[in-house]
Image 1 (cartoon, rainbow, N blue to C red):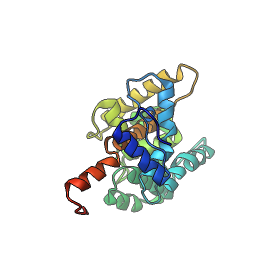
Image 2 (cartoon, rainbow, N blue to C red; image 1 turned 90 degrees about the horizontal axis):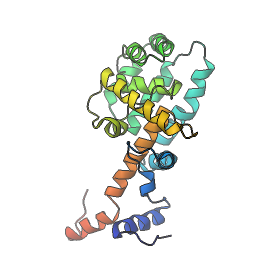
Image 3 (cartoon, rainbow, N blue to C red; image 1 turned 180 degrees about the horizontal axis):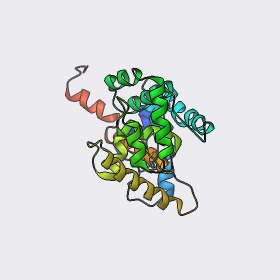
Image 4 (cartoon, rainbow, N blue to C red; image 1 turned 30 degrees about the vertical axis):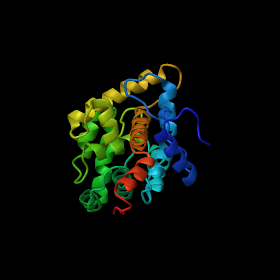
Length: 245
């Protein structure tokens, strides 16, 4: 159903969404990092699954479910000496690259690692928590594993301490996403930990990883609002019916 009081571009987006069966992106799904409105953050977080599916990337929903729902309890069952197995690292990297930018060389490097080496490095990393600096350093000895991938490993086990270092959340929290260093990650993690505590002060629990997912979801929603389907119709009329490939 169309809503009154909307702009023409928003109406176009709603028409497209109604035709495709998708819910339209709303301003309620966007959140600014400076905001202390827990309800706005919860709305952005609640839209995560829909924003993920809207990307239309093969297998992304499946590997995201593995990463968020299957892997954390699996790691917890291995307490008090948790570790990450190599096949799990491969699937985790598939999730990271699918949700962001695909870098085949990283996957080749990780697939070439020895199982025992992955287990040993991850054991040391998990044991180092909550010392993020040491934990990240233990994981980045693995070829193909940088601070961002290492953060994804740690986030699966300790979501309250170690948020995933996504481009979208980095831009929102720090203003850029070009510096994939330990120093940058530590600054990023501290910001998200602080924000999670701020949002949890009202009684609702937010982890640092919840904050990251809400920021990612908000960034994807923002892209949808900036480029509504109506723009495609305008572009086609300007090119006199010529098809773009």
